[in-house]
Length: 188
Image (cartoon, rainbow, N blue to C red; front, side, top):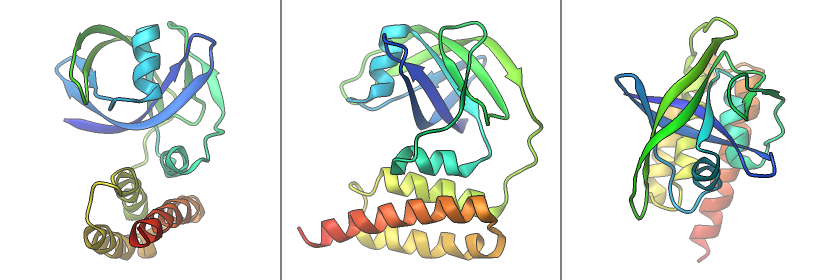
């Protein structure tokens, strides 16, 4: 199973880094698969710890990909790290083994500490649309322009029916960033 989360890591100077990431859940382990090169991978290999944040505010997912990265953080309880103050829950993890790969190493992690902060109320279709659009943004250089435009048109149907102010803000960030990248690609 893959869960869409926000991973928080820290470098050796204590500077936090946030990254949206689909993590794999396998029995009682989490598998984090960051691409090379990435700040998340560097921080994980250096500190051997991370925080998995479960969040329903899609602005954070969209913001991490569009330069809106200033989200309130709180100190983790059992590891040297931070979690999103807006997280519904967070899980502090430690790497137990690494399977090397040239493109995307597998970092197997175990739970050190887990906290439930707020109940999950469920996603509406607009939140789902923003998450999927954010994934498209992260892959815009790898997918055909027609595929991206087609997917966005489909996602906009559910978005328009159910979006609130948070979703509208996140959608604007993501779709503007996608359009900017598509415009650059069309002019190359």
